[in-house]
Length: 290
Image (cartoon, rainbow, N blue to C red; front, side):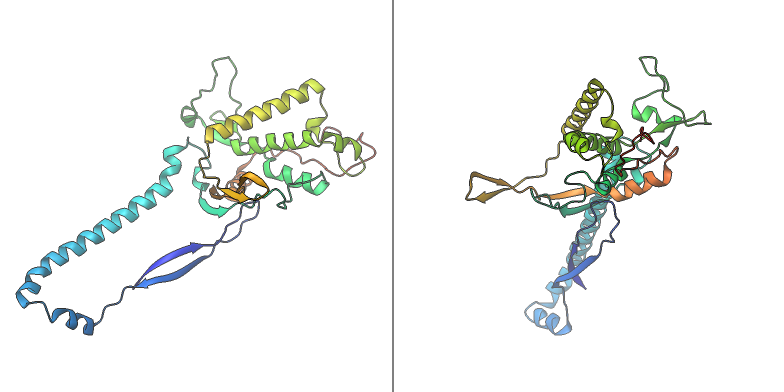
């Protein structure tokens, strides 16, 4: 029997599932043998040993009970934090956590980073481009909603049903908004390279409409960041070129497994929207709406 420390390898963080493997390292074996027992008992009178046995058994049982209680409490807290801290969601069973150092240095490579290409634009769209999932009527109250909103509008029903309603998940709206801000930051590039990349549909609206969309997305991301208020420490690293040091942007984080939520959405979506062709075309008269 031994005490063990479990070290988990980094799990996935992008769109592909990677099996997490656990490495078990033995730290301090808890060994007991007959010779050691006899040696220990030599200096202990028989009466003391006999009287101490019930006390020792009581202590052992109490320690075991405390350890089991701590383990159960820790496991419950780790698994139940979803239901304690989050609103109801049809995807709540998919929420699973893992720890990793996020590779986020200024020059860190990523398939989501850099000038637009058909492949990069398609990778971004794949993150968020989904249809709707169904929300049953009896769960509207858990979302602080009724079918008819105070301003007179109504929640959209799933086609052909009377008791299920259309919904997305916030993470995909937020990723869509981040994609819009990314596209807007490369607007001039899209305009100059129409032979290699297509200008996204979200950029091909009136200047006022585009400005409102981008401002909405910036405000959405601001509110989301403040709502979540990530309190993960960001250490400051000594840097001879910077008197105030440099933040360690590749901080250690506890993350939700995005791929599990993404895969659930892919399985359960309805009314799947058409994907955009990101390849540049000289004749933009075909499929202009994307």
